Length: 314
Image (cartoon, rainbow, N blue to C red; front, side, top):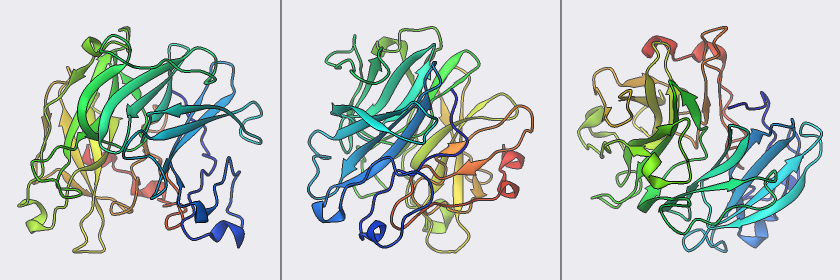
């Protein structure tokens, strides 16, 4: 999957700051803060013809995020200089756009803590399939959580990190369980039977000397040794030294394991929204560029220098 190196800002302003100072980058769209419907979960992909597609959902007190979330899709034919909305998708939240075998997909829950769906578009995001059964896009029924993280292809499989959200403790953070979804790269991604789901690693109150708050917003990453890992942020507020967690995934995608001794790593931005939003290992350099893909009024964005690479921990 290809991503533009520089992500245009999809700005969610809870304070109205956009009226006072224009943010850097290109504004794809804007919704006034007084509507109490805020822009979130930005995602971006490059289509086979070289044009860009970007998406965002709506959250906030006047949104429908807890019932049937709404996502909008935009397209740029001039490498991000200008954008035009091409579609509105009902029932998509925290969703990722990705291109696989020259076809555009969208994957994520249908609402806040919702059922996981996958959609396909054959006309550059103008229209999308509507999932109704396990044969046409309904992948996981239940309660799930994620961020709009990249979907990657590695070792013949396609990978997407996800979290269960059904507890047993239903408090924020504590309700989430780290897991991984994967499918053969040549499978029909619209069929639930094509996908393998790992076990879920649930909240453990003893981790980090009792300061562990939960598994948050996992990111599928191909490690230098050829394995797949799930890198999640960790909201540990006991120290200014922020952290991430590395969950190991078996080659077949069925087993997730975590070592509490070696699994936590230093990670600037780990207590902020989606700092692990893009972690990739370029073959040429072997280094991990890390950037936040969810800028907001309180986080525009986390800038993490290349020296903060996590290669030595994988």
